[in-house]
Length: 367
Image (cartoon, rainbow, N blue to C red):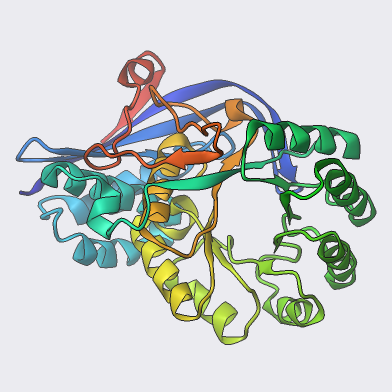
């Protein structure tokens, strides 16, 4: 089996509601996703989505075609590990998100060729996982409290706060949510907003309120102050979602004991291959590898296959609101009344792509 064609169909994503997750992420209106197609001479096709509501596929799409397509053409997709090594040599020219999309599509292709879901190729650990609701920035402590109660009542496993990122207000949000939900699992994701003194103040408040983890309080590469923060607090610290990078980027965080849990997703870490390797690396140190939201619907399916194949992830993240996160599938991932999501068991990713929508909203084909 040989790869004979690689193309990226750009399609419009309109009517995205105004959404904010912190100082780094505010968006609304329109974006574009890319449907990646990797085809073989046997007629088997692997797919992935590139892009998100906040990061149009036009940003990374041309680099994928210009720099990664030549690496793929004529290769046996079963030699995925060898291909991935060559893809990473192009990182400076094409970016990690493009590598991640290609890696996901290769796993999808091989799964289809073998008639097996990706999680079975990786080695299934479980077929369902608890889901948590991950908030946008809301207008008041009361709004967070109301939303947290809503998802608790739905039966979801946990609720995570993306706060206003002003430390005094953030503490008030934490207090309001804990008071509203009582004995329920809640987390705080401060999206790299604080300096060290503010991070300590907010962390101590979240710690005293019994929060499950304290995510990304400091600048994403401030390893020095993360070491100090971890020593100052007993609440688990969750870092390493950014910077966008591959497996080697986790080395200093482990060696310097700068975080309790590791973090990543298929978009910003280079695909399924990196996630699995990092999860096993974390397992060797008895650390959790908490998988982050993937930025688009098909990436989340890929994330879910990884979660199903490893034992050291606690939850599946569902980023709110749905209209800013779910697009392009006939049936998206659904959280049941038991608070669980179930991994697809069809070949490859096992997700039904909405090809009719993509054709209707098509902007261009890069090839």
